[in-house]
Image (cartoon, rainbow, N blue to C red; front, top):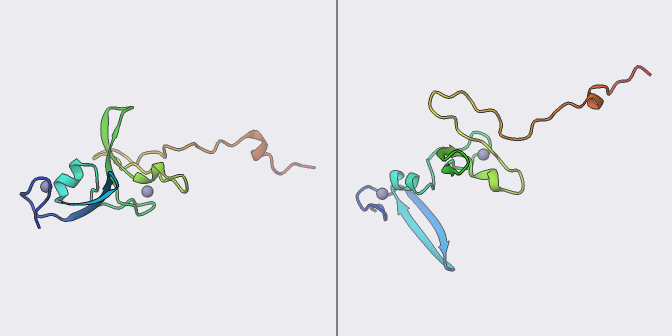
Length: 108
Ligand SMILES: [Zn+2]
Ligand SMILES: [Zn+2]
């Protein structure tokens, strides 16, 4: 089956979306799926969700990351490092050791 978008390449990805209460299944080739930010074919190394191309308004750049960041439960904020970029630090709050936590064992 050919890609519904470009009708040139073989479709490899079936993407189901709901538009106006109607289920629509798109058959897309890898290139079109990536353009639409659907799937990159890679799985998140942390939670296994398929990584998607996303656009950051903050930096004005596209990046590949885990779609799990918007989950309420067990959000996953993995962002794939760009080529040549070292592993990104976690974009989550760091656990700052408070002086209290460090002095759990009091001499008394
Ligand atoms: Zn296509
Ligand atoms: Zn993830």
